[in-house]
Image 1 (cartoon, rainbow over the protein chains, first blue to last red):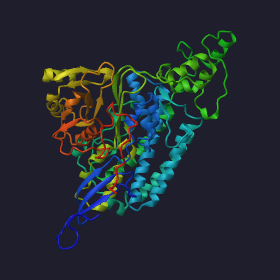
Image 2: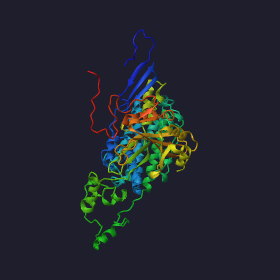
Image 3: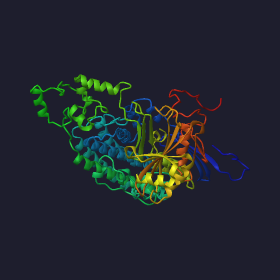
Image 4: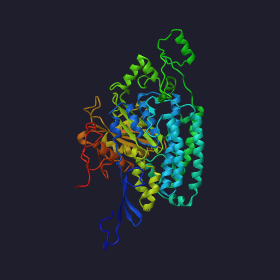
Length: 448
Length: 162
């Protein structure tokens, strides 16, 4: 597209170039209207909203748990973190505390998602600089991790695994060994990528000193996550205001001081290693939790459970044996009660109970039928978690009914996009691509 | 609670209401005093709220018991990196006077967040340097997150004139 006065006789004129909304290096759809003087960007206007799907409006239409699948589609590269962030906000509103094992599972799955997100970001942005091998290697590593995600959640991308009050199902058998094996392979990939990129002359020339945003501006634009840490501020919600069990796990917060694209690359590479450390510690210390809970809330072991039944003390004990479909792996009563809070107002009964007893069936109906779901007391709560791109916050408002009155997602990608023009103005038009890659825009989360 | 006490002491009647439901410190501020309170929150050494984490609004038109009160609440979530504390500030505005002073001069991120609130709720930010919609397109009619905007409303497709 040529600007006004282009052609002959007008003297030197700036050229207007629209980049996007459909451009192979735009990760999603976004439009950047640039004004170029030669090859230098002198002005840029970022237009977003092409992927707006009314997430916040949709959440107000159904029950509290119905919003979980929508949250998958916010940051679809690390959907588990969104699930847990939303569920935790509602739990804060309900004032309930999830079980220990559930907290560990949430930490483990969040960190695996974070690695997937960073792998995708670094892989895709290196591909755009011509390092196609790196992209293939990193996507291979992401595949190892996605297999873990698939094992646990039954899906790869739109996982809908979080629940208010817990998670959908317990971890499958052999998960720890599989994870450690996947991490071994991932570390090999990361080593290879380090050798290919970190000291690579072409890569460094394209990344160092490009896309710089000062520390003050980064804070003024409310940018969090790897971009803020690359500018020298060691802020991480996991450390600053620990949630789940992050305060019991050892990890470092990698920082750099230059605030350029290379610093962001180094921060992301270091964070993946830290995430693997967190998962390894969490797997080593995850508690098994109560095997079974009696109707007064005291844990009893399976033998005692059987004994009571033999003695005819069946009151309150649900003895109907149900063979569950393999699709419900990890959701058998014992596993289910380990990872979900024992609160009938919030958590669906396990399937054996729902299908095997009238109380369970009623409980299930009360939570599923319209007008009977979870009813947090009127009030509001904001719960921040550390998403892969920074602070992911959910602000939920309840009017005491079974539907959210308002759900607000604080998207970690929006602030970097608001500041994108500050990173690209004054640089070459070709530098737009690595800078845009380094902010790791995720359209679903940005536009909601 | 020290933060809320400090705000009440300094701004008196401009702090309409405070609470700490579920541990989230919240203060409702009178609109006239808003910019003063926000600037104080950022600049005061003990508060040092250097990050405007989030800015959004809630439409209380259909909230049981609040149908007749001010329709909108504009909500500011502040965070201090140095002090590691959070604060929620709210301003109530009526539908026929849905205007709030802009905070762009205090935090540059307010530019986009205020555009989004204008886009979704139709609350105007006076003095905003670039008051366009953020997510919807310019030809869009209405403000979709208002409670009286039906979720299934269709708008005409916008394309090049034929």
